[in-house]
Amino acid sequence: MRRFGLTSMRNLGVGRAGLEKHLLEDMERFIEQIKEEILEYGEYNVNLHRKIDRLAGSTVNRVIFGYPFEDEQMSDFYELKQHMEEQAFLLSSVTGHMLMAMPWLRHFPIFSQTFNRLDNNLSNVYEFLKIPINKRISEREKQTPEERGEPNDLLDCFLDQIEAGKSEYFSLRSITPFCFDLFLAGEETTSVTISYLILYLILDQRVQSRMHEELDRLEEEKGRIGFDNSVTQADRGKLPFLNAVINETQRVCNLLPLNLTHRTMADAQILGGKYHLRKGISIIPQISCVLFDEKIFPNPLRFEPERFLDDQGQLKRIEEFIPFGLGKRICMGESLAKTELFLFTANFFRHFQVLPVDPLHPPSSEKIGGFIVKHQHYNCRIIVRTKKEF
Image 1 (tube, rainbow, N blue to C red):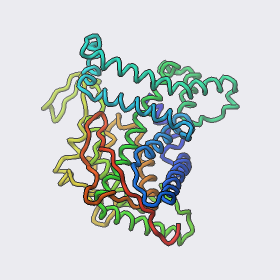
Image 2 (image 1 turned 90 degrees about the vertical axis):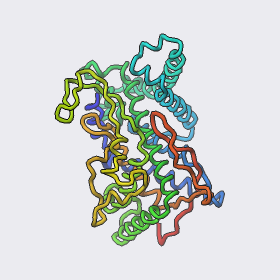
Image 3 (image 1 turned 180 degrees about the horizontal axis):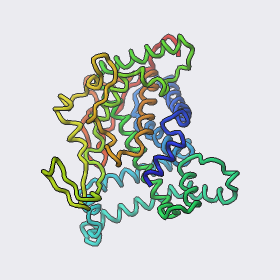
């Protein structure tokens, strides 16, 4: 299933120009909406959380189902988000962790309440996801393979596999959990990371100013040779500091301090035989132990994007930087997430400066523990940047 997901996303153009065009269109609408609200209200103090949620949710929905969320669908989307957030909260609780490890505990009163809430939430999410799934199945039944053409999204790819009948893993029963896993993993993580990035730049105007200077140099260069003003992935190599800001955001926010549980498939010796892991034992990679290791990242609690730059000011690779995990079980959505983070950061900050609403009482960067580590909601002041030409 994992190999199928990776291959299908690559074939659909995830991480390349195939999806980039749609992401830039969504980003342009996002930027224009903020500019219109600034014109209407003047000084613009806002909590961007819901807007960023919609942007990230539309991207994942486009990859899975082939379309972004429109205005009339937003109430359904936020209801879905509420169920998913409660699901993540319950899974991160003590009883949730114990139920994942020992499902039979659901028969005991102290755990039954958590299990029932998890089950009800999952049922509500599945019902939401079944609507586009059933609609697509109905549409395909009326079409010939020639009329369908090439797959447009992951749902098409999955249904093609079911019809091919080559694997028992692909069935109408497994399609909804597959879509749920992708949506849960792809929307929340990207949305929270973007919110953290904005928060850190509100709190560190020096870093934000340096990033603006780099973007201005790129825009001046693009203007001289007549390219479109939107920043694309082709510009990634010309923005080393911006990429360093994204890396440092992922390191410091550390969304998943405890990665997902895996299992050893064979007996294993660790550190030259110092530790012996039996086949079938549960293991949980602790990414935070690496991302906050002082030997690798001096002053690990400080937000310092420069740690990702070499002496020539170019982005450098640090092997221990593993926000997406590592090995065969690295995050399947890494390519999509990197594309989203880069296009958002470059194009949003090209247009805007973000400031604290009250400089004497800036927003807190204190973290809220959970399955995904979040920050407290905050308002920010957004100013349209004055430039020579847009």
